[in-house]
Length: 445
Image (cartoon, rainbow, N blue to C red; front, side, top):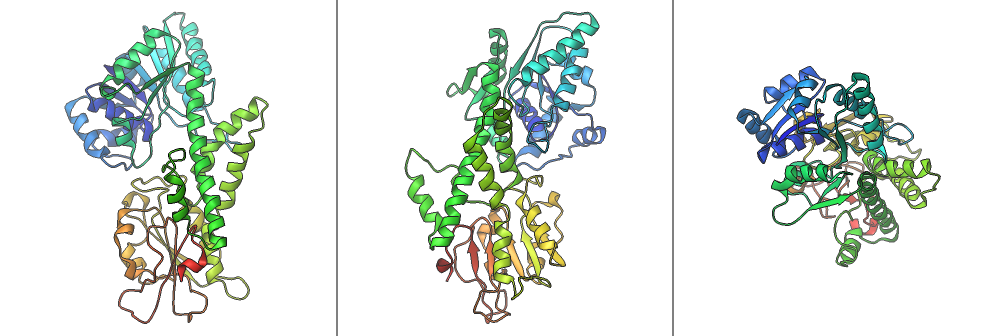
């Protein structure tokens, strides 16, 4: 099939590339000429495992093209995807200006029956606004083309987006007309062979499904963070607790890890909360999830400060290194990373904060090897395989109370190491220690 996709970010580029991989002919549109030129040269603007060779291979075969020419793409596509950003406003509401701009562009250029698919994360009833924007442009042109607006939310995990797209758990399609559903089924047939992964529903239910999924994930994160905080205070190990509850099939293993709160976790809840408020409802549970997430945001720095602070609570003069900058493994996305808050917190009382990451697009200031030679503390960020693999002998960090001042300890973010003493490289006299979210202090001894 012939497909047009507006947007070449995480959703648009991955979706377009995977559709081309299974044989469809895809044109991706972006208003950024430099970005389009780069993509046509094989320069991929994001990091996702497996994406770069797939883009280059399908571009070379002619099944995947990139352009700034919206009219060309719309004329090409039997199906047109809207996959542009919807950045949240301060109150949590999604900014629909880019979605509606694409809708108006579609209305100015379609010349026959069309299916317009909203892939962006949007509030309930956005399809109505998209439909109205397209119809307004058709009326201005004095033409009457049949079209349908479909909701097809994405459920891609950054860092696993290609795998998620090629092997989806489910494909949600919200549409009014059977013809539109039939066209979408043709599009997704290559992904739907072993079993029927397509879940058909009305448009508004599909839009709400995306918000509900995001809110549920945020709820699980906040729940485990609260349990982890209790574990720290009572001297328990949240990993043991996780094993105890995850083995219950009613609970399961997914998303029951304590992690530092991120802006992304807040955004996961914001859409559903905003929708509830708009319709006169007070979302008690989602408000609590947001409250827990906000309280967790400063927890990582509090652990560092608690162990480094002198009598007056100052950590001035200390130097910190952060291992891993992106908000999760196998991505270069810094937009919602907790490392940003951590570095900002360290930067207020401390003159230096080195950063290192396995993926170069996050622009670290030092390699992990060089950073460990001069820092006073290390705060491991996302659980990259390099972090799990070792190099523990290089770690230095937070002074353990009772040790001499030159004996250092290490504070850990995602619990990628076991809580055992770690010695700096080449120095058998100094001892480092590892501290993890959700482990009581007595367990670190």
